[in-house]
Image 1: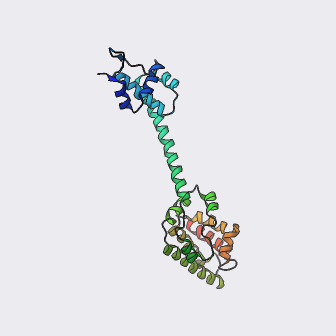
Image 2: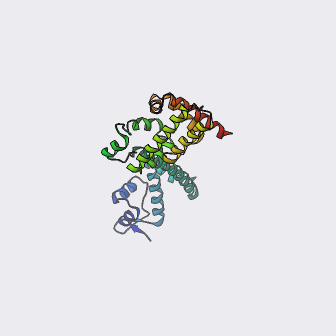
Image 3: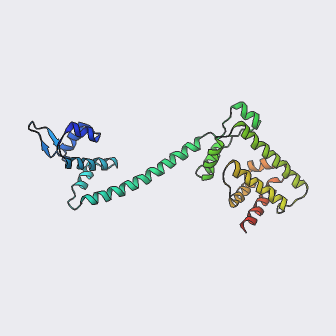
Length: 253
């Protein structure tokens, strides 16, 4: 059984011109000719074409493909092993590329799915996206950032209002705790610190105690976070940082 150049082009998904070129450079010379001098390809020729197209797909230049296929020391099993190794490497590279693209898609997802009117209704004169670019730059490569983006992209106005209400209620209770003179290492303060951590886990991302400890440090070191907590009560940021640290330490035991 032999096949015309047009048939082979159709089988392989290449152009007739490509097959002519492979013939001219000696990469794939048809094993037969018709009485009229037309190219006829055998099953062995198709096998070789399959090998050529495989290496071309992996980016090998034609001269290297020829050297690989014409290597007198290589047998079909050696080609299969080489192809398996190359495919494994390509699959891993594509997996990483896909993960990078997925992450980029997540990072560009708008986290606040509200109209301008709804944003004002929920957040007042605060802009919930004010530090979005900075947050992406600082934490965009983390699993926590990606998880937070996935979650908040689905939140409605009612969800955001619920978060705001819970935060305000927590702030009022922490204010009362400090007014009562409760130390940050006391049970009441640690309980509110744990509630703070659980709030993050529920609405944004999983926050282990040691990560929560790091956040507590940031609430004091970063003036913007500090201002947020200080607006609830002066000194609250530092008090909360110590309560978070104490809570993390007791859970580490």
